[in-house]
Image (cartoon, rainbow, N blue to C red; front, side):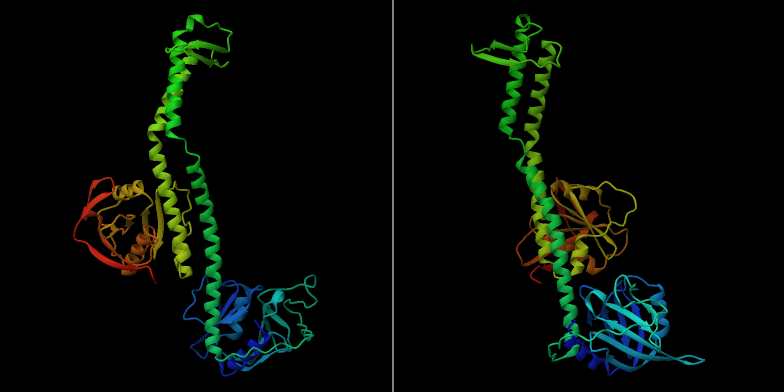
Length: 442
């Protein structure tokens, strides 16, 4: 907060005559309602203190600390007697009065935008501290902030602050909120994309380290061949031998190493046959593992792209729901789960996930799919309730975001699960459906 800006905001605040309500909406943000309908928020973080205005700001919880109790008692429905910059520094002071049945109480409310020592302090008429957002002891600063102690003044700044004119103070306060949200969104995106990139690198590493089918088939044939040679030449192999040279069926010399852990040639041959069988099985199933990893990598790239394109914090919060379950629940790595206004929304990451969604959904759950093109399947768990339009639209947007990168207008069909008939795998037929349009350009 620049001193020049604070002076101009102070002049703007001097038009108000009453504090109608005041309370914390988060750990460091205080909401003040002036003259019934003018709301102003004071962000009192040490690293980034500021004032801002916005259409609405959700209250995270009701605070009942001693500071909050005194704040409400002294300033709810309080008359504003004077507003000023105090001590020539970045300190905004309100002088207020509240008339009770017995007497009139005058109190100072001091917002200090002073970097490391940013604070909100409540003082009586004699400038004795009644309460503070942050208590400061003498070990931390020469200027002690402690209940019952007189508050010392602030030394005069050794320089003259530059002037930064504001054309429209109210618009400036709204812009401060927009800037704050942009900063938070940018920081949140960076954090979440870093997390997703780590997961992507793990998947890519697994993909790179997949065995080669041709090598596995060669290993299977070789092990089977060596096992047969050992059984055919058992009578010629001495018990103490560790390496034997045998003639194969084509007259070529073959060297076979006998491992110490096997007590007989027969057991060594059986171990080779077992290795051959495992290599064959792995080779035959390798394409399934490769396709699974490819689909997971594609899903993760779509996830990263969706986070990058998010326009607000609410979208990020939707993509990364908090774990509200107390017990540990086994997660399905083929299904992504989101929550929209309390409704569980499940999305298939790959064909296996799509099939599981179709098989496990209930008749009245809502199924969504992009119109006339392959896409992720989405299920809204309804619990037999009517699903609001915003939940359907949000789910349709997820269906598109996790299917395609290109920005455009897309159609998404939706219908109760009972109207969907499985043909084979994740291929379905459905009727009695409705369609919603999703525009990813906005």
